[in-house]
Image (cartoon, rainbow, N blue to C red; front, top):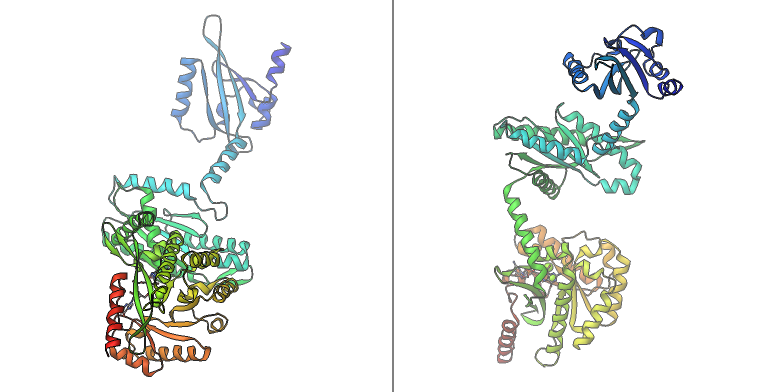
Amino acid sequence: MRIAATAFEAQQGMTITDAQHVILQVNQAYTQITGYSAEESIGKTPNMLASGRHDSSYYAAMMQSLEQNGAWTGEIWNRRKTGEVYPEWLTISAVKDSAGLTSHYVAIFSDITAKKESELRINHLAFYDPLTQLPNRRLLLDRLQQALASRKRSDAYGAILFIDLDNFKTLNDTLGHHIGDLLLQQVAQRLRNCVREGDTVARLGGDEFVVMLEELGNQLQDAVAQCESVGKKILATLNQPYQLAGHVYKNTPSIGITLINTHQEKVDDLLRRADLAMYQAKAAGRNTMCFFDPEMQSAVTARAALESDLGQAIQAAQFVLHYQAQVVRDGEIVGVEALVRWQHPLRGLVSPAEFIPLAEETGLILPLGRWVLETACQQIADWAGQAETAHLSVAVNVSALQVHQDDFVEQVLELLQRSGAPAQRLKLELTESLLLNDLDTVISKMMRLKAMGVGFSLDDFGTGYSSLSYLKRLPLDQLKIDQGFIRDILVDPNDAAIAKMVIVLGETLGLSVIAEGVECVAQKDFLAQIGCHAYQGYLFSRPLPLAGFMQLLREKSGAGSGA
Ligand code: C2E
Ligand code: MG
Ligand code: MG
């Protein structure tokens, strides 16, 4: 009896009823959990605890289980004396008499409010972004999956808007992450206000948000128009100034939009398309929106193929150098620019304009650039041994990434030494992009190479972020007027003015000036008249394979000696 009494006063709530469910006895824990004393409960049925959250069929199933199995276990919502509804975990067992008939029921229960709450919290943590309280990537993927599934049933369009904040990193870097967080929270709030109740706004991470629109109707034009109007609303809203802990701050988004067309699509593909469209919006100058278009997709696919081919092209020796003459005065060849070409086994000759940017993005420019330098040095060495070519300089384009390598100077010096090429014949063509960061290091590298005799030309001059102040600090030898200014130099007074300015600048700083992209005599004459006497362009020669260039050189010198 004592043991039974002790067991009865356990942590869990207990009630004992008769076969008609009339309460005979309750324990301390029962009173603690429900708020009802023994006196208030005895003589009544557990019905007094009903929360109203379960319908009659729920209780009917419970009764059926008790009759058939003699027991029932499950979660149930009950109501405390205070009126508060709470969840409990309940086990009811039937007690049989010697005849096998139910004489009593014993119910044991515990309050699982805390457990439920932590479940909810865990759920929230797993599916929501703690900073903005928006659904996270996981929940978004889940909802996208559902949206695709429901596309099977209805043919209403849906859409995804991929939103990336412009220059968010700069804000973080300048005002700190705390301020960046404030912006993200306010953006989240504004985005929520831009969409309807049922639409999802999610944060993918960083400054990337996704808005998912559903039920856009089954007319393509309508659906597009609706997306566009939401997109515009988002643009306008996110363009409003923010108040960030005392800072008034302006920010803009770039938005990529793609429609959810068919249920056969994959969630990943949808997101990738929206992401691509977002990059398109960035490329279009930011603070704008772009729809995904299929041509973009094929361009992306082709690029991926090119990228994988490029990786093998060096080992497979598919690159060659072509040489384009650099001339002075009336066509006297004083050097060449080495221009790399890719002989693709299937696509034929691929232009560097197509693969150099790709090589820069993937880092392949490093081995490729080294190969170009090595080949050019060998060519210089070769030419140095012959009277008719010994004077030729070779200009080699080098990418910013190459120069920024720690051992760039050593690499160049080693290649010069190994080939035996005179450094005075090597000219490195740099672009202004190189000068955007770590200018002091770049200058000191240039100084070291210059001390060995290597020359420097600033390519595409005038197209970059030219800051004239760095020009005098750089140990340059030459400015190269970009062909963009030469093309219309005869008709566009602005181009002519820029060309003149570069020439005067060159004179002032003691640098030679060469014009590239000279295609006709009139351009050359005009340039000569304003003081530019070095040229490169189709007028004199296209970039040629070595044999072709050698022939050109012989023809010229033949003509020269014959004259
Ligand atoms: P760039 O260094 O400005 O080279 C001049 C480009 O203008 C060359 O194009 C050349 O073929 C073209 N060109 C020359 N004369 C004329 C002309 O009279 N009219 C017209 N319309 N174009 C002319 P290409 O060979 O396609 O090279 C494009 C760019 O690729 C080069 O521009 C350079 O930035 C890059 N590049 C080429 N070879 C290399 C390399 O070995 N390394 C690196 N890093 N970049 C390279
Ligand atoms: Mg060049
Ligand atoms: Mg150029």
